[in-house]
Amino acid sequence: MKYEKIKSKIDEIISERDFLRRLLYAGLNLLLLRAWYVKDEVKNFFKSKNENEKIKVLDAGCGFGQYSYFIAKKFKNSEVLGIDINEQRINDCEKFARRKKIENLKFELADLTKLEQTEKFDLILAIDVMEHIEDDVKVFENFFKALKRGGFLIISTPSNLGGSDVHSDEDESFIEEHVRTGYSVEEIKLKLENSGFKNVNVRYTYGRWGQLSWKLMMKFPVMMLGKSFAFAMLLPLYYLLVSIPGIFLMWLDKKVRNEIGTGLIITARK
Image (cartoon, rainbow, N blue to C red):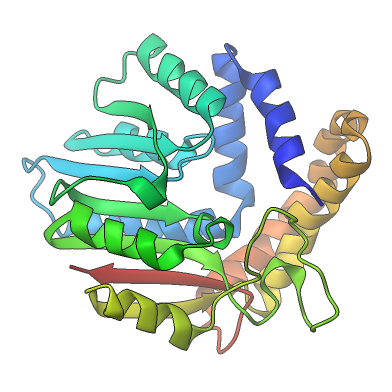
């Protein structure tokens, strides 16, 4: 499925419509299990910092900008830069930030494989990004260079144990734009360590309960939208029916320690 077509349609709908953009952000934060894990890691990072310390954050491959917005609004001592390769999306995010006068939030067009920053950021996020980039090692090296000494990296990406809805050699990725179906724990840890990172911690997300929630909350709605965007009219009713069981399943996924899972949450330090 070409997920980018759906995302482009969403871009059209929320462009210049700030209420719809904020509604999208709220929906993604609630309905995406990975957002629960990422926000926990971000909160833990900021808890370890002095409230008066200026924290520079790079949201690498920021997409719709929901994580950039979350950090800039919640942590007033942050200076957030969201970057992405999609020019229209970046322009829309930047205009939104300026209309809302969010002074600690900016967006710029950039290619992560050509990132040229040196010891600038305290925190880098790469959420749902690395599965789209062929030259991942170059990106990891760029992240390492861009972080200050002691800087922190957070990555969320599919695992090789069913990530991208691939469970055998015959399966195709659910998202056609993915250049890899997922990482093994050993592979991504080794690549990060070879790029210079230390204290690399890799945990499984989307275990038994998380996989069920993903099918309810994401896979089935995206499949319907892929057939026809007219199904968007039915989404409020659909989520009214599945949101409570879906959110409960996500809560369970966070409560248990997943021995395996279709997703990974990775943290590392420079």
